[in-house]
Image (cartoon, rainbow, N blue to C red; front, top):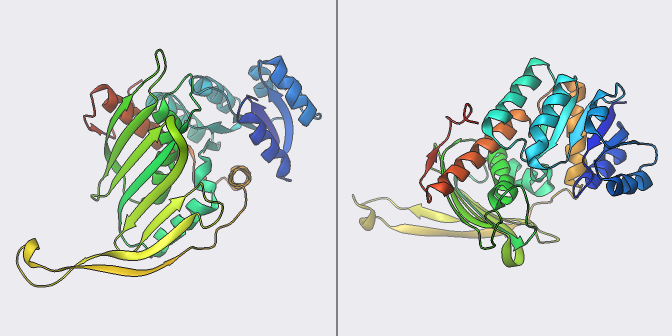
Length: 342
């Protein structure tokens, strides 16, 4: 039974610890956090786990086979690299690092040591996103034309990352999982409306090599929480509303078709297809449990998970490109040349 250590027991760490305990094939051996109060909470919930104030002691423990990192983004690289060099498999919160160069080093280190490096992109393990993935893979949606997402709420303001690195990271991971074509450029604009705080709202456009586009609206200063995505395909369209308790995914047999005849677009007839709507059955299993199970399945079988290191690196590349674009007032930034930039 693999021994697991969790570093960071703040906002997300307790959820990860609970999920590890619920997966029968693993054992939670240790929890590390510099906060004594956090360790006291951890001790009450997980009395059999060692409690450590120094994450280095956790990594040095020979009983630990895999390390799960739930600390601020700026610390991910140092902790993950130390764990990999100690021969531990790593699951790290999103985003995996705060620069493309650092993320690339982690990917190379894991590959060199034949270790699993996985990123906590929880959304791609939800029943809703997996259902949409199956629809795309089956061809029922046809060619993907666009992905239009609104991910807004009031808070939670982050200290070490802006709204793009916090919220848009989810959509970048979902796009990486769903869309077969690859992004070639990103344009982004962002604004900060509170003094001495990171950007709290942003609009992003992602351009893909096959002509598809994605538009993202992310915001920490919205009056309500909205998590809605519209995906348009050549055959069908999908609305994914994560705030719904049922029918999170709805498939619409609707579209636009161009008729025959006429040399110009104005001379050709446009017809509108209005078909049925249906809601596919979606697994109610908690995404975090699925993710933890995938982590240990990948370790056992030496197989790459859907949110493996390369996927995490691609997400960081998109985040870095978006950040660069915001500094240039929305100028599109080409992807693919950032891996050697710190």
